[in-house]
Image 1 (cartoon, rainbow, N blue to C red):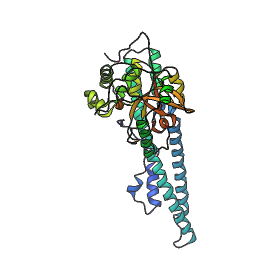
Image 2: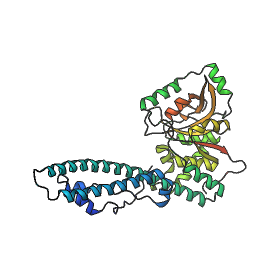
Image 3: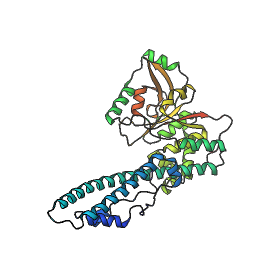
Image 4: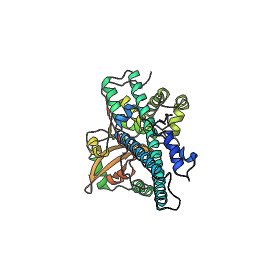
Amino acid sequence: MTPLSNKLCLSDWPLAFAVMIAFVFGLLTQASAQQIPALTVLPPDLAASDVALTTQRTELTQERTALHGKINDMNARCVAVVEGSAAEAVCKRDQAELAVALNVHIQKSNDFNDDARSALTTHQMLKKMDELANKLGWSPDKQARLHNALHKLDFDGDPNVTGEQIRHAWQNVLNRNPDADLVREASQGSGLGFPGAGTQTVHNDCTIFALANVTGRPYGEVGATATELIREGEWRNANDRANPQASIESNGLRGGEVVMLAESFGQAEVVPSTDFVKTLNEGRPIMLNVVPPTGNVNSGHEVVLTKTFQHGGETWFVMMDSNQGPQRRLFLSSKELNTVLQENGVAYRPESGTTPALLR
Protein backbone atom coordinates (compact mmCIF):
# COMPACT_ATOMS: atom_id res chain seq x y z
CA MET A 1 0.00 0.00 0.00
CA THR A 2 1.14 3.54 -0.67
CA PRO A 3 2.17 5.09 2.67
CA LEU A 4 0.36 8.22 3.78
CA SER A 5 2.35 10.97 5.45
CA ASN A 6 1.92 11.23 9.18
CA LYS A 7 3.28 13.53 11.84
CA LEU A 8 5.41 12.29 14.72
CA CYS A 9 5.00 13.51 18.26
CA LEU A 10 8.30 14.79 19.66
CA SER A 11 6.93 15.66 23.07
CA ASP A 12 7.17 12.09 24.39
CA TRP A 13 11.02 12.11 24.14
CA PRO A 14 12.09 15.40 25.78
CA LEU A 15 15.07 17.23 24.34
CA ALA A 16 16.60 17.32 27.80
CA PHE A 17 16.55 13.52 27.82
CA ALA A 18 18.50 13.33 24.57
CA VAL A 19 21.05 15.90 25.78
CA MET A 20 21.41 14.04 29.08
CA ILE A 21 22.10 10.78 27.26
CA ALA A 22 24.78 12.46 25.19
CA PHE A 23 26.32 13.94 28.34
CA VAL A 24 26.39 10.70 30.31
CA PHE A 25 27.60 8.47 27.52
CA GLY A 26 30.78 10.17 26.47
CA LEU A 27 31.13 7.80 23.54
CA LEU A 28 27.77 8.89 22.11
CA THR A 29 27.65 11.99 19.97
CA GLN A 30 24.82 14.51 19.84
CA ALA A 31 23.99 13.14 16.39
CA SER A 32 23.41 9.65 17.75
CA ALA A 33 21.23 11.07 20.48
CA GLN A 34 19.07 12.69 17.82
CA GLN A 35 18.44 9.28 16.24
CA ILE A 36 16.18 8.34 19.12
CA PRO A 37 12.79 8.25 17.34
CA ALA A 38 9.65 9.84 18.61
CA LEU A 39 6.75 7.41 18.79
CA THR A 40 4.07 7.76 16.13
CA VAL A 41 0.85 9.22 17.50
CA LEU A 42 -2.19 6.97 17.05
CA PRO A 43 -5.51 8.73 16.31
CA PRO A 44 -8.15 7.94 18.97
CA ASP A 45 -10.25 5.74 16.68
CA LEU A 46 -7.20 3.71 15.58
CA ALA A 47 -5.97 3.44 19.17
CA ALA A 48 -9.37 2.12 20.24
CA SER A 49 -9.57 -0.45 17.43
CA ASP A 50 -5.96 -1.71 17.50
CA VAL A 51 -5.42 -2.81 21.09
CA ALA A 52 -2.10 -4.54 20.38
CA LEU A 53 -0.56 -1.45 18.79
CA THR A 54 -1.86 0.79 21.56
CA THR A 55 -0.44 -1.55 24.21
CA GLN A 56 2.92 -1.62 22.42
CA ARG A 57 3.10 2.18 22.43
CA THR A 58 2.18 2.34 26.12
CA GLU A 59 4.88 -0.17 26.99
CA LEU A 60 7.50 1.77 25.00
CA THR A 61 6.49 5.01 26.71
CA GLN A 62 6.86 3.35 30.11
CA GLU A 63 10.22 1.94 29.07
CA ARG A 64 11.40 5.43 28.13
CA THR A 65 10.35 6.73 31.50
CA ALA A 66 12.31 3.93 33.20
CA LEU A 67 15.39 4.70 31.10
CA HIS A 68 15.08 8.35 31.98
CA GLY A 69 15.02 7.44 35.68
CA LYS A 70 18.10 5.23 35.37
CA ILE A 71 20.00 8.02 33.64
CA ASN A 72 19.02 10.49 36.35
CA ASP A 73 20.21 8.02 38.97
CA MET A 74 23.52 7.48 37.19
CA ASN A 75 24.03 11.22 36.84
CA ALA A 76 23.59 11.67 40.57
CA ARG A 77 25.98 8.83 41.39
CA CYS A 78 28.64 9.29 38.77
CA VAL A 79 29.03 13.01 38.16
CA ALA A 80 31.89 13.35 40.69
CA VAL A 81 33.39 9.86 41.03
CA VAL A 82 37.15 9.57 41.53
CA GLU A 83 39.08 8.29 38.56
CA GLY A 84 40.29 4.76 39.10
CA SER A 85 37.97 4.14 42.05
CA ALA A 86 35.60 1.24 42.54
CA ALA A 87 32.72 3.69 42.14
CA GLU A 88 34.00 4.68 38.68
CA ALA A 89 34.14 1.02 37.66
CA VAL A 90 30.51 0.59 38.70
CA CYS A 91 29.54 3.71 36.73
CA LYS A 92 31.29 2.45 33.61
CA ARG A 93 29.50 -0.90 33.94
CA ASP A 94 26.14 0.84 34.33
CA GLN A 95 26.97 3.10 31.39
CA ALA A 96 27.64 0.09 29.16
CA GLU A 97 24.43 -1.65 30.25
CA LEU A 98 22.38 1.48 29.62
CA ALA A 99 23.95 1.91 26.18
CA VAL A 100 22.82 -1.61 25.25
CA ALA A 101 19.34 -1.00 26.67
CA LEU A 102 19.09 2.26 24.76
CA ASN A 103 20.02 0.61 21.45
CA VAL A 104 17.44 -2.12 22.02
CA HIS A 105 14.82 0.49 22.82
CA ILE A 106 15.64 2.46 19.66
CA GLN A 107 15.20 -0.68 17.53
CA LYS A 108 11.89 -1.51 19.21
CA SER A 109 10.74 2.07 18.67
CA ASN A 110 11.65 1.95 14.99
CA ASP A 111 9.78 -1.34 14.60
CA PHE A 112 6.74 0.15 16.30
CA ASN A 113 6.83 3.21 14.06
CA ASP A 114 6.95 0.99 10.95
CA ASP A 115 3.91 -0.95 12.17
CA ALA A 116 2.09 2.24 13.19
CA ARG A 117 2.66 3.92 9.82
CA SER A 118 1.34 0.82 8.04
CA ALA A 119 -1.68 0.75 10.35
CA LEU A 120 -2.31 4.45 9.72
CA THR A 121 -2.18 3.89 5.97
CA THR A 122 -4.70 1.07 6.20
CA HIS A 123 -6.85 3.02 8.66
CA GLN A 124 -7.07 6.03 6.33
CA MET A 125 -7.82 3.79 3.36
CA LEU A 126 -10.70 2.06 5.15
CA LYS A 127 -12.17 5.38 6.28
CA LYS A 128 -12.13 6.63 2.68
CA MET A 129 -13.88 3.45 1.54
CA ASP A 130 -16.59 3.92 4.15
CA GLU A 131 -17.00 7.51 2.98
CA LEU A 132 -17.29 6.47 -0.67
CA ALA A 133 -19.95 3.87 0.13
CA ASN A 134 -21.94 6.55 1.93
CA LYS A 135 -21.44 8.99 -0.96
CA LEU A 136 -22.77 6.37 -3.38
CA GLY A 137 -25.93 5.98 -1.35
CA TRP A 138 -25.44 2.37 -0.33
CA SER A 139 -28.05 1.18 2.15
CA PRO A 140 -27.20 1.24 5.87
CA ASP A 141 -27.04 -2.58 5.91
CA LYS A 142 -24.65 -2.60 2.96
CA GLN A 143 -22.45 0.08 4.51
CA ALA A 144 -22.35 -1.77 7.83
CA ARG A 145 -21.46 -5.04 6.11
CA LEU A 146 -18.67 -3.33 4.16
CA HIS A 147 -17.30 -1.66 7.30
CA ASN A 148 -17.29 -4.91 9.27
CA ALA A 149 -15.63 -6.85 6.46
CA LEU A 150 -12.94 -4.25 5.89
CA HIS A 151 -11.96 -4.27 9.56
CA LYS A 152 -11.76 -8.06 9.74
CA LEU A 153 -9.11 -8.45 7.04
CA ASP A 154 -6.04 -9.98 8.67
CA PHE A 155 -3.20 -12.44 8.22
CA ASP A 156 -4.11 -16.11 7.99
CA GLY A 157 -2.12 -19.25 7.31
CA ASP A 158 1.15 -20.52 8.77
CA PRO A 159 3.32 -17.61 10.06
CA ASN A 160 6.44 -19.81 10.15
CA VAL A 161 6.26 -21.25 6.64
CA THR A 162 9.33 -20.81 4.39
CA GLY A 163 9.57 -19.92 0.73
CA GLU A 164 10.85 -23.41 -0.03
CA GLN A 165 7.85 -25.00 1.69
CA ILE A 166 5.50 -22.75 -0.28
CA ARG A 167 7.17 -23.65 -3.59
CA HIS A 168 7.01 -27.35 -2.71
CA ALA A 169 3.29 -27.12 -1.86
CA TRP A 170 2.55 -25.38 -5.17
CA GLN A 171 4.55 -28.00 -7.09
CA ASN A 172 2.46 -30.73 -5.50
CA VAL A 173 -0.78 -28.95 -6.37
CA LEU A 174 0.15 -28.06 -9.95
CA ASN A 175 1.66 -31.44 -10.76
CA ARG A 176 -1.15 -33.43 -9.17
CA ASN A 177 -2.86 -35.81 -11.59
CA PRO A 178 -6.12 -36.47 -9.75
CA ASP A 179 -7.18 -40.10 -9.65
CA ALA A 180 -10.76 -41.26 -10.14
CA ASP A 181 -11.50 -41.33 -6.41
CA LEU A 182 -10.31 -37.74 -5.91
CA VAL A 183 -12.38 -36.45 -8.84
CA ARG A 184 -15.46 -38.38 -7.72
CA GLU A 185 -15.21 -37.15 -4.12
CA ALA A 186 -14.69 -33.57 -5.27
CA SER A 187 -17.66 -33.72 -7.65
CA GLN A 188 -20.00 -34.68 -4.84
CA GLY A 189 -19.57 -31.33 -3.13
CA SER A 190 -21.67 -28.28 -4.00
CA GLY A 191 -20.03 -25.24 -5.52
CA LEU A 192 -19.21 -23.40 -8.72
CA GLY A 193 -19.48 -25.60 -11.76
CA PHE A 194 -19.26 -23.13 -14.61
CA PRO A 195 -16.05 -22.27 -16.51
CA GLY A 196 -13.84 -19.46 -15.30
CA ALA A 197 -13.66 -16.00 -16.85
CA GLY A 198 -10.50 -16.70 -18.84
CA THR A 199 -6.74 -17.05 -18.53
CA GLN A 200 -4.47 -14.51 -16.89
CA THR A 201 -1.59 -13.51 -19.15
CA VAL A 202 1.05 -10.81 -18.65
CA HIS A 203 -0.95 -8.48 -16.37
CA ASN A 204 -1.32 -8.58 -12.58
CA ASP A 205 -5.12 -8.68 -12.83
CA CYS A 206 -5.73 -11.93 -10.97
CA THR A 207 -8.13 -10.09 -8.63
CA ILE A 208 -10.37 -9.16 -11.57
CA PHE A 209 -10.42 -12.77 -12.73
CA ALA A 210 -11.16 -13.95 -9.18
CA LEU A 211 -14.03 -11.47 -8.80
CA ALA A 212 -15.41 -12.43 -12.22
CA ASN A 213 -15.20 -16.12 -11.30
CA VAL A 214 -16.81 -15.74 -7.90
CA THR A 215 -19.64 -13.48 -9.10
CA GLY A 216 -20.24 -15.26 -12.41
CA ARG A 217 -19.93 -11.95 -14.27
CA PRO A 218 -17.90 -11.23 -17.43
CA TYR A 219 -14.32 -10.11 -16.95
CA GLY A 220 -15.03 -6.86 -18.82
CA GLU A 221 -17.88 -5.89 -16.50
CA VAL A 222 -15.84 -6.52 -13.37
CA GLY A 223 -12.82 -4.74 -14.86
CA ALA A 224 -14.87 -1.67 -15.77
CA THR A 225 -16.34 -1.50 -12.27
CA ALA A 226 -12.86 -1.86 -10.76
CA THR A 227 -11.44 1.00 -12.84
CA GLU A 228 -14.28 3.24 -11.71
CA LEU A 229 -13.57 2.34 -8.09
CA ILE A 230 -9.89 3.25 -8.46
CA ARG A 231 -10.79 6.47 -10.29
CA GLU A 232 -12.98 7.57 -7.37
CA GLY A 233 -10.82 6.08 -4.62
CA GLU A 234 -9.35 8.98 -2.66
CA TRP A 235 -7.04 6.53 -0.88
CA ARG A 236 -5.14 6.12 -4.17
CA ASN A 237 -2.52 8.54 -5.49
CA ALA A 238 -3.23 10.90 -8.38
CA ASN A 239 -1.46 8.76 -10.99
CA ASP A 240 -3.44 5.64 -10.05
CA ARG A 241 -6.70 7.54 -10.22
CA ALA A 242 -5.84 9.07 -13.59
CA ASN A 243 -4.78 5.70 -15.04
CA PRO A 244 -6.83 3.08 -13.16
CA GLN A 245 -6.59 0.32 -15.74
CA ALA A 246 -2.81 0.58 -15.96
CA SER A 247 -2.60 0.61 -12.17
CA ILE A 248 -4.66 -2.59 -11.89
CA GLU A 249 -2.68 -4.34 -14.62
CA SER A 250 0.63 -3.38 -12.98
CA ASN A 251 -0.14 -3.75 -9.28
CA GLY A 252 -3.53 -5.43 -8.97
CA LEU A 253 -6.07 -4.51 -6.29
CA ARG A 254 -5.64 -4.16 -2.55
CA GLY A 255 -7.46 -6.36 -0.08
CA GLY A 256 -9.96 -3.67 0.91
CA GLU A 257 -10.71 -2.92 -2.74
CA VAL A 258 -11.49 -6.59 -3.38
CA VAL A 259 -13.95 -6.54 -0.48
CA MET A 260 -15.64 -3.35 -1.72
CA LEU A 261 -15.96 -4.65 -5.26
CA ALA A 262 -17.42 -7.94 -4.04
CA GLU A 263 -19.92 -6.02 -1.91
CA SER A 264 -20.84 -3.86 -4.92
CA PHE A 265 -22.00 -6.99 -6.77
CA GLY A 266 -23.66 -8.74 -3.84
CA GLN A 267 -22.68 -9.49 -0.26
CA ALA A 268 -19.10 -9.90 0.99
CA GLU A 269 -17.95 -11.38 4.28
CA VAL A 270 -14.39 -11.85 5.54
CA VAL A 271 -13.97 -15.35 6.95
CA PRO A 272 -10.98 -16.98 8.70
CA SER A 273 -9.57 -20.28 7.47
CA THR A 274 -11.29 -22.06 10.37
CA ASP A 275 -14.63 -21.21 8.71
CA PHE A 276 -13.73 -22.14 5.12
CA VAL A 277 -15.41 -25.55 5.22
CA LYS A 278 -18.60 -24.20 6.78
CA THR A 279 -18.74 -21.30 4.31
CA LEU A 280 -18.21 -23.48 1.24
CA ASN A 281 -20.80 -25.97 2.45
CA GLU A 282 -23.27 -23.06 2.55
CA GLY A 283 -22.65 -22.60 -1.17
CA ARG A 284 -20.56 -19.45 -0.88
CA PRO A 285 -17.27 -19.40 -2.87
CA ILE A 286 -14.26 -17.77 -1.21
CA MET A 287 -11.65 -15.47 -2.73
CA LEU A 288 -8.18 -15.92 -1.26
CA ASN A 289 -4.91 -14.02 -1.31
CA VAL A 290 -2.16 -16.64 -1.45
CA VAL A 291 1.60 -16.59 -1.90
CA PRO A 292 2.34 -17.26 -5.58
CA PRO A 293 4.22 -20.39 -6.75
CA THR A 294 7.53 -18.47 -6.64
CA GLY A 295 7.35 -18.57 -2.84
CA ASN A 296 7.84 -14.80 -2.60
CA VAL A 297 5.94 -13.88 0.58
CA ASN A 298 6.10 -10.19 -0.38
CA SER A 299 3.89 -10.88 -3.38
CA GLY A 300 0.32 -12.14 -3.65
CA HIS A 301 -2.03 -13.96 -5.99
CA GLU A 302 -5.85 -14.08 -5.87
CA VAL A 303 -7.61 -17.42 -6.32
CA VAL A 304 -11.08 -18.82 -5.58
CA LEU A 305 -12.07 -21.82 -3.45
CA THR A 306 -15.20 -23.40 -4.91
CA LYS A 307 -15.71 -26.66 -3.00
CA THR A 308 -14.55 -28.69 -0.03
CA PHE A 309 -14.62 -32.47 0.33
CA GLN A 310 -13.14 -35.35 2.30
CA HIS A 311 -10.37 -37.47 0.82
CA GLY A 312 -8.30 -40.06 2.63
CA GLY A 313 -9.67 -38.91 5.97
CA GLU A 314 -8.54 -35.31 5.35
CA THR A 315 -10.23 -32.07 4.29
CA TRP A 316 -9.50 -31.04 0.71
CA PHE A 317 -10.49 -28.10 -1.48
CA VAL A 318 -11.17 -27.33 -5.14
CA MET A 319 -9.57 -24.11 -6.39
CA MET A 320 -9.95 -21.91 -9.49
CA ASP A 321 -6.71 -20.19 -10.51
CA SER A 322 -6.71 -17.70 -13.41
CA ASN A 323 -3.16 -18.78 -14.29
CA GLN A 324 -4.53 -22.23 -15.15
CA GLY A 325 -7.28 -21.16 -17.54
CA PRO A 326 -11.09 -21.28 -17.33
CA GLN A 327 -11.58 -25.06 -17.30
CA ARG A 328 -8.90 -26.56 -15.06
CA ARG A 329 -9.56 -27.05 -11.34
CA LEU A 330 -6.80 -27.56 -8.79
CA PHE A 331 -7.11 -29.94 -5.84
CA LEU A 332 -5.27 -29.20 -2.60
CA SER A 333 -5.26 -30.49 0.94
CA SER A 334 -5.98 -28.30 3.94
CA LYS A 335 -2.28 -28.48 4.87
CA GLU A 336 -1.23 -27.28 1.41
CA LEU A 337 -3.79 -24.48 1.56
CA ASN A 338 -2.55 -23.38 4.99
CA THR A 339 1.01 -23.31 3.62
CA VAL A 340 0.27 -20.91 0.75
CA LEU A 341 -2.46 -18.84 2.43
CA GLN A 342 -1.71 -15.18 3.28
CA GLU A 343 -4.96 -13.62 4.50
CA ASN A 344 -8.52 -14.33 5.60
CA GLY A 345 -10.85 -15.20 2.74
CA VAL A 346 -13.59 -13.06 1.22
CA ALA A 347 -16.81 -15.07 0.92
CA TYR A 348 -19.41 -13.99 -1.62
CA ARG A 349 -23.12 -14.49 -2.14
CA PRO A 350 -25.35 -12.73 -4.68
CA GLU A 351 -27.88 -10.22 -3.45
CA SER A 352 -31.11 -11.14 -5.16
CA GLY A 353 -33.09 -8.38 -6.80
CA THR A 354 -30.45 -5.66 -6.50
CA THR A 355 -27.38 -4.71 -8.46
CA PRO A 356 -26.04 -1.58 -6.74
CA ALA A 357 -24.21 0.82 -9.01
CA LEU A 358 -20.73 1.31 -7.67
CA LEU A 359 -20.09 4.63 -9.39
CA ARG A 360 -22.05 6.92 -11.66
